Image 1 (tube, rainbow, N blue to C red):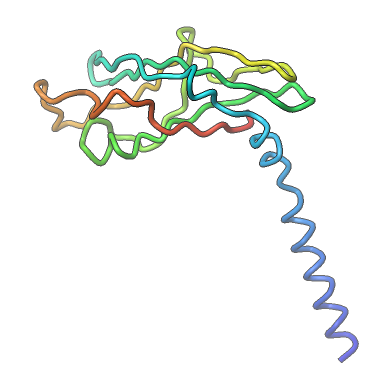
Image 2: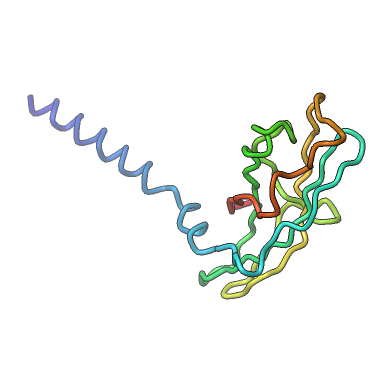
Length: 141
């Protein structure tokens, strides 16, 4: 019985160690999108690609410099048949997807979210349902 308790406590300590190792979540919480300085600009197509042009300002409130990626949640656009992908990583005009933000600073980025048009896309349908900026997640690069 004593051996069983030791094994149980060992397994619990392993689980706690793994759950506390998620350091990315702490940094992500310290970077925020500044909503009033971020917006959707336009959507346009080239070939079989759809480009969502946006302006996004990210503020780093932590004491550390961070390198991030921004991932757009385009599930609403996908569900409405405008793009194949649900989640798309942003790139700047040079194709760069990782952005460094210094401690206690904000950076404004002109970004593209580039997706693939579905085969059934009609030339007459709008390229985006509304003018709102879709949800964007901040990920550690």
